[in-house]
Amino acid sequence: MPQPPHDEPTASSPQELREQVEQTRTELGKTVEVLAAKADVKARAQEKATEVKEQAVAKAGELKGQAALKGGELKEKATGLARQAQDRLPGPVKGKVVQAAEQARAKASQAGRMWQDKAPESERHTSHYKPDAAQTSCR
Image (tube, rainbow, N blue to C red; front, side, top):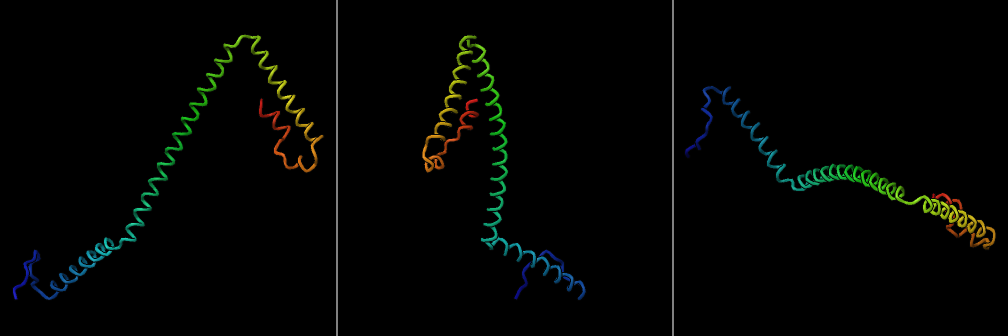
């Protein structure tokens, strides 16, 4: 039976032959490991899932940073526009707006106190109304 051709020169001594056999075994072992890894679909899927997850986390962090930056810019722009609108209001209108806001806060506070004084005990504790919150939320 003829031997298949190979690139390795034939060994000239038994020691050389042993070294070639050992090198071939090592190469064959590495090849088997690579093939086994390629055949392990579950492990490859887990590796890919981990990779995709890491990419998603990185992208989410990047988008979160961009959103925070854009949110800050929009808040700054809205504040500027509100100031411009406020600056354009005539003085008497500004005074009336401030006065109306103060009256609304006072009435809300008064209504809250009245509710606490007049409402039945069972209703007072189930209510979500907080008189102090009404005062501070309009400021």
